[in-house]
Length: 470
Ligand code: C5P
Ligand code: C5P
Ligand code: ZN
Figure 1 (tube, rainbow, N blue to C red):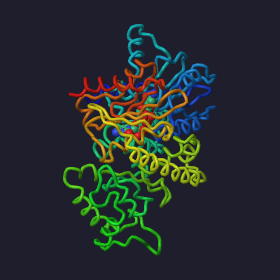
Figure 2: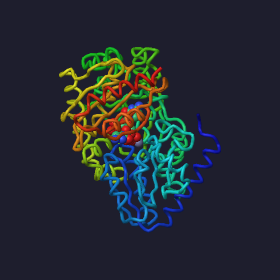
Figure 3: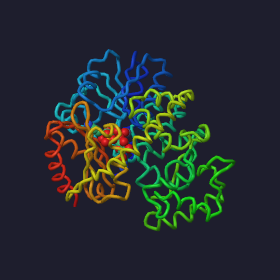
Figure 4: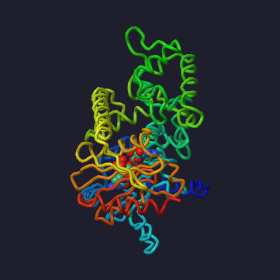
């Protein structure tokens, strides 16, 4: 159900109230998530607090663990502003002065507590699900944080492009080959500033930085028959269209092609992709014209990957510097991106070469053990699902070893969500039944469970999936 005018009025009222709280406070502890959306959100909150002249600190967290809850409950700052995290764990917080700008499915226990006791627990909870919106694709954590920043000061609209990075980082554009809902209002702010240009283009990854042959070769979601994973085929393809691969010895990138070359190549690629996949292959792409050319910061998907390459490898600080416009961080960020690329590529080979993916009736799963970082296993699970090498009509569950047990990541095709699947609820229920905790979104969710509970957990997940999906 779309948000009504009343929902939007309520949201604005609550944003204005939280904005007043921020303006009036002494000190702020900002806690945000380590993924692209979380770093963008953390940066928006950081810059907002800085512009208000408040004492503030930023901390990035992998998840809301017991330690994070303890840090929030015992913090000395007047306000704890939690971004892209928190909604799933509201009932754990036991202090006043909490602001949550998040988009995860909210903790149902907290809602019950609120209605039964009707007591204001000191949490300003700003989440799209409370205002008739779907947080998995209409607005992200950075988007909610941005809306609060804008309520604090309308001149903070120069931060809108960071919310676009967050949304793309969370794949909110993958549904309709473009952003929808509240994300479009945020996009309009970024376009009005001249920070964002929307292109109708192929939606493959790397149009600003990947050599054109690799841009074609590594295309996935959807695959281009004859070009994906076919190096020789890509060179031949360019040749047959009379498109030079190199300029003065240097590989050209997709964005270096002339408009006429791009149009010609696009038409041929869409023909190869076929009419059924065309709407996935072609659509809106987001460009930041003020960012330096040939860097990973000019295209929203690439920018998000740069941030993921920092945050998911314990270097969210570099991602934050990038979002703050500190171009001296670019070298570190690009090195992180190269390391991330290697880790992902060896993770994909590891799964393929060892035939790790197992199919059951209603789910498929793999256990990466300690071969894939727990912060990256979700990205890999998503890539396996969209690689074309496995069934898309059942969810994928992935395990990776973690300090406090086993990290679980779950991903599904959106068509399953349309048929009733809610991975957030499944991760929460199944993990709690085996002594863990979890949550997330309908299409992408996660959990942490005890190491000896994987089999029982899979059984429960499979039961829940079969009961949800019609
Ligand atoms: O915690 P947060 O909401 O920011 O993370 C959402 C996660 O779900 C991201 O890592 C994003 O990449 C992933 N996702 C996905 N496929 C989707 C939607 C989200 O892998 N269709
Ligand atoms: O870690 P992963 O990318 O698989 O997480 C998918 C989604 O599930 C993210 O939005 C993440 O914040 C959420 N999640 C959660 N609780 C957990 C683990 C993941 O809400 N314990
Ligand atoms: Zn998010």
